[in-house]
Length: 151
View 1 (cartoon, rainbow, N blue to C red):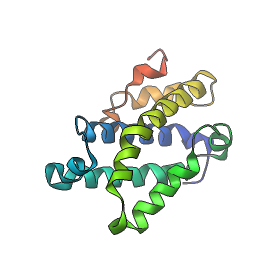
View 2 (view 1 turned 60 degrees about the horizontal axis):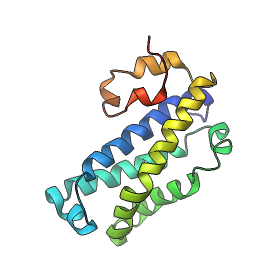
View 3 (view 1 turned 90 degrees about the horizontal axis):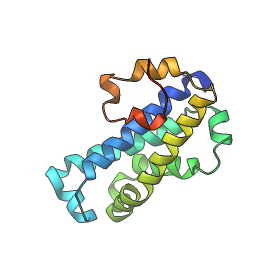
View 4 (view 1 turned 45 degrees about the vertical axis):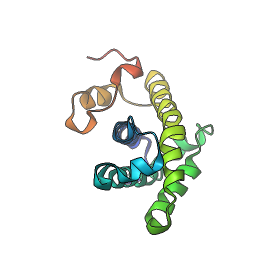
């Protein structure tokens, strides 16, 4: 898809959903080693895939979003995607775990705030958001955090 502002809501929701899943998959796990070994590495591997998806999705956001939210480290997020995709064997599980536990919650908060702000400004479509509510693709999104009256 082309980098068009009309697609930004879809991409923001996709990233929010992915982060919510990563947080769920790593919930109650205290160390990087435990996370790596937990559930025969299924949660760890799923998380890596979701982190790659998030980084890939950043590259699809419109320049309007990227330029008007300089407080979000878009370049680092894309960089993590490249690191995971191209250097899988040499990944440091401690760094990945630190990102999950210490960086993703702040990124998630920023994405909810950015999405809510753009919805309130009319830049993103509330009608499209209403279509996403209840979708099986967005099971983990807390739509109440957008503070938008649902139709």
